[in-house]
Every structure is written in C-alpha cells, then in structure tokens.
Length: 407
Length: 224
Ligand SMILES: Nc1ncnc2c1ncn2[C@@H]1O[C@H](COP(=O)(O)OP(=O)(O)OP(=O)(O)O)[C@@H](O)[C@H]1O
Ligand SMILES: [Mg+2]
Image (cartoon, rainbow over all chains, first blue to last red; front, top):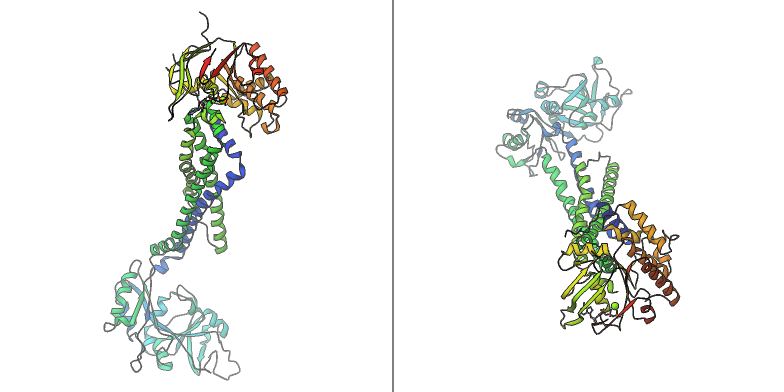
C-alpha cells in the first residue's frame, strides 16, 4: 500500500519562519545586530576603498605620469658649497632619450629693501608687489612648466646664456604691477635692476606658483643674487609617457656622474601602489573588524536560535504530533535563522551604503560602489544565518516528540 | 467487508532500553472499533502515557505489533508513519500545547499545514472546527486571552480539523476546574455521539465513567 507523506509548501515554511521570528521581535532584532554591523562594515570598507581609489585615479592623470622632479640633497659642507646642479644641467638631461623638456629653477630670496616693482625705487608712479615671488628658471624649466602665454614670448637658451635682463611675469603678478600691454615695452624693477618684460603667462600645466612669480633666466639670477641658498634648486623634467621611471633612474648620474648621491629624483607615483596603499592601511584593519562582527553576528544568531529551540521544544513536539517530519523542523529553524541573517544583511547593506555616501559627501568625493557588492551583502547575511542556524536546527530535529510533549 | 478496527494491538509492549531497563508497557492485546469511547485509568507512572504514545505513533512498540486502521505501523517507513499520525490521529494534551502568539484559527490551521491542505480549505475547516467546539466567536483571539476551558476547546478543534480516525486525549481536564472540565467532557461526548473514536487517559474515575469501556493500566499491565 502506498501511503502519502507529510509535505509543506514553501509559502507555509516562509510564513512559519516569519511567525517564529515575530514571536520575540525585540530579541530577533538584537540578534540581527551583529550581522547588521558585520555586513555594514564590510560594505562601508569596500565602498570607501573603491571610492578613495577612484579619487586617486582621477588625480593621477597623464600629466603626473610624465613628470620627474630632481632635488638637490648635497650635504652642506662649508667651503665646498655650491649648487649640486651643474651649469649645463638642462642640456645634460635633455640629451636623455624620452625627455621632452628639463630645467633648473629656484626661488630667489631678495635682500630686505629690495622690492619687485613697476618702476625704480622711490619714483611716484612705482607700484610694488609684495606678494610676488622671484623665480630663477632656466629656459628648459620654463618650457617644462607647459606655459600658455597671454602676451609676448618666453625666453630661450639665448637669453639664458647671455645673462639677459628679461623677465616673464605670471598673470597675477602682471595685473598687480599694472602691466597690461607689452607693446609699451614695460619693465619690472627688482631692487634697482630693471628687467624687460617679454611675456605674460596666462596659465601653466605644472608649477602653478609661477603664475604669481617674476621669472628671470637662471644665469642672470646667479650673476645678480648668487647661487640658490637654503631654498635649493629643483629640476623639473617632463618625459614621454611611460619614460618617467627610467628617466628618474638616469637623471642623477647624467647630471653628476661624480656624485649622483647629491641628487634625488622623484618619479611619478605608481597608481597601483597608491590604490593598494589605501587597501593596506586602514582597509585591512576594518575588513578584519567587519569579519569579526560577522562572526559575532553568527554566534549571536546561533545562540539565540539554540535557546529558542530549547524553549520551543513543546512546540516542536506538537508540530511532530501534527505530522511534521524531522526535516520540516530542521528547515523551519534554518529558515528562521536565514531570515534573521538576510534581514541583518539588508539593513547592514543600507547602513553601509549610507556611510559611504555620507563620507563621500563630506570629502566631496564621488561615491563609487560596485552593484555586485551591494547585491552580495544580503547573500552574505543569508549565508551567515544558514551557518549559524545549522547546529540549532539539527538539535531541533533530534527532539523526540514523545519527550517534548510530556511537559 | 467490514471496516478494520481503528486500533489493534497484538502482544504490543514497550521496554525503555535504559539502563536501567523499564518495562513501561507489558505485551498486551487490545482492539478498539470505530466509534468507540474508551477511557484509560491507572495510577501515576503506570504506563498510561506510554500506551498513548504507542497508539498515537509517537513511539513504536519494542515487541508485538500495532495496526492503525488495519495498517501495520511497523511495516511503513518513518515518513509514512509521521504522515499517518498527522492525518489519522488528533491529539489533546493536558497542557493544551497551543502556540501563544498565534490566533485560535492559526493554531487550528497548523494541523493542516503539514498535509499541504490549500489555504482556503484550511481556513474554512479551521473555522468549522472552532464553531463545532463552540468558539465561532473567538476565531482571532490569542490563546493568552482565552480561559483554560476555551484553550482546551481550541486544542480539540485543532485535533478535529484534520478529520482524524482517532481522538487521543491525555488528561484533557487535568488543568481545568470541575465545571469547565464537565463542559469539555460534554464536548467529547458530543463528538463520540457524532461517530468519532475517542480514547481518553485520566486518573479521575468521574471522567473515566464517561467512556463506554474503561481499561485499567497498573505497573505497565493492561487490565481490560
Ligand atoms: N524515556 C523514558 N525512559 C525510561 N523510562 C521512562 C521513559 N518514559 C517513561 N518512563 C517510565 O515509564 C513508566 C511509565 O511512564 P508513563 O509516563 O507512561 O506513566 P503515566 O501512567 O502516564 O503516569 P502519569 O499519570 O504520572 O502521567 C514510568 O515508570 C516512567 O518513569
Ligand atoms: Mg502521563
């Protein structure tokens, strides 16, 4: 004879599980907190990492990828002083394959009383600009800055070699000095020395400080004010794309074959190392914390479900008496713990997303979060619930109905 | 062909393995026909609940055999036995065993969840059963809002809902005062009158007198 078996519809399973959770709503909510924190932290960390990484991507343009700076780090030995950069520095570096422009520059410190002004000191019409900086730059350095000229021209190697008294002004400085039209052949006075203004910069690609500077040829500056003092010279090199790292390695040797250690070349940062830097530092710590939260969440669910199983042994016995098989009991308790995990995952995912958006808004970043991450979060909660519910559910299925109903 | 007896015990006995071994029910023969009203009495620890567990398929005899509606319950699988229990036996317990957070109707419906009875049918039958026990006006009440007698009526409605062949009651009036108990027993009388096979365990002789036949169990021995 063929007898029917007990069966339960999925819908009934779901509604029994929900009813089980709703029996003690406060306890269920507290139980889910661990999962909420775990999943929330996980989402927040991965989201913030990808958000931060994408900001680095945005900043890390082609411009930065083709820039090398060389610093003078020669030891300060008295008597042996003098710039680490040789006088033919530009030419030495420009010879290297892959260099598009290179040049040395430094800020000139003026003596007290020496002003940058539009006329000779003391003249009635003289306007001085105390905010202006005086920059000594070789012709190559000016080229490497990627200037766009508003008027006139920039100086070249000829001016540099002949110690010409010419100057290129940043747009801001020109405006403050009242120099608007180069057709009048204006001059700028540095101290009492006049310099012919031959160009006004509208913009530069690099070294934005040049826009508020008076830029004079390197040799002229050396003749008038001596070599760079404590504000040391720097070399700016622009390269072809992909050549920067190689140039950074070669430049100190090309400049000072005798003492390459006097110079330090800084290649552009590797974008990959920047990104993993973010992931390494705080990210990993937080991921660990998130994992710990998730484990605590799982233990919480396991504990609560186990307590519930023991508390509800009468109910389990009754269900068995009403025709539930052991597997129906197992699935019901698993469904309850999975629903708790799913709930925790959903709430956690929302909180995590809110955190990312809030942090991004505060930092004026564009929040970046992969949809797959948000989609996996509730599944992660579900898996936590499944794992946590396994043992209690098994215990529940082992409860003998005759024993459970005796009470 | 006449219908098989609802209960047929053939030298059925149960010994708990222990240690120590407990011969909770010594091998006995018993036949209960459809529509009978049997009461079982005996002192505490005599083996009444053990006996009920066997005929309720909550436990299996360790010797002999038990036929429910002519089906040898030892010859079927565990899953089939569980289904038999759910469909053919209605249980009523001393402590009601109602789910306190579910309404009377939901408690009654639970008896049909594991039969996969369609929701509509389930609802309808639950209402019918609750009306049968005189609780047609308390369908959506929570058990915590019901009196003891009303709770036991809900439990009886639940036992009836799946339309069983056998109603098994273990001390159904044990938690009730005598007046409430009487009304519950009147309800059982009515069910018997309508053709239900009823087995009631009690140690109250007053209750025992309600049955057509009383079986005494003493020290695991079934005395007809
Ligand atoms: N799981 C078990 N293991 C061992 N012995 C048991 C077990 N269950 C019951 N017993 C013993 O079997 C005997 C019969 O118990 P049973 O519960 O059937 O008594 P009862 O007649 O229902 O008593 P009461 O009127 O107090 O409910 C008792 O001596 C009891 O201790
Ligand atoms: Mg008993």
